[in-house]
Image (cartoon, rainbow, N blue to C red; front, side, top):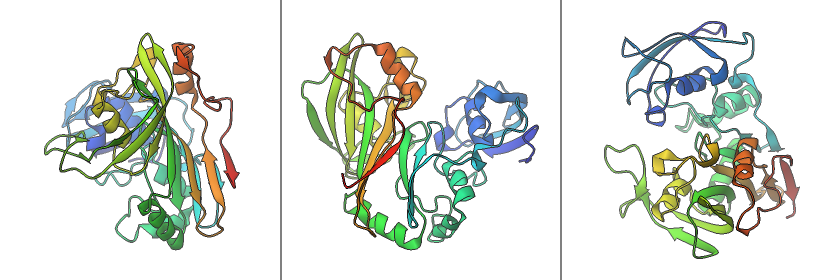
Length: 330
């Protein structure tokens, strides 16, 4: 791929996470240029000219010539993601929606990833990929591309070892905000259901031979027209798409998540899922750390269109007017 943002020629294969997605969105991820600024000279799939709004099947070869409408704007691969908490052995960052955490195996040079942004600021984490995780150095846990919010990343070998232990011991508190379809008969609940993938399918589902997965939730408020519920969700395990799969399995898919049956109400442009808070005991200082990421403006806009809930209230802090923060000893 050319390094001149005024004219890029890109070539790659469609991986699972890009299958069925509009090519202009996929190209925005590959080039690091926001979709609103992308200009196309050509887009081809397996040698055939297609439209940017078309999608491509898994394994298809994509070739495109693109440019940035505001030539000279740097790629997100070289722009720092917001850092909410930093120590010598780890860092807590805020991933925007639409950003892939790490490049896929068939496209290791993809720009615009969280790993690319982190390597630009913390080059030492590259050494943490030597154990077989070359494409995801220092990553302790992940969130989906279209989910926004908090991620913890190790900066040193001892940090990676300690936080892997903390995750294995289920001592990393991961709190999410979710808007789901339908109304609940209970104020809170827990879903214990194994998650796996059937052969040949790109999505996951609750299946008897899957891996153990546990999710708990509290209903904060609800609307009747259309029937929606706002939840605080806690992940006790970290399976791929866990919240999305579990909520769909109990008949309450996440709003804006078509893969698992969620409708896009109030013009939601992506799945309404945000990793709002991360809490843990610092393994080196003993401090009790709680890092908070405010709800992004696009999700706040959906809630504003929903209006006042019929039952319950939106929790304090679910507002983009607040800034990311950290609390110790709480």
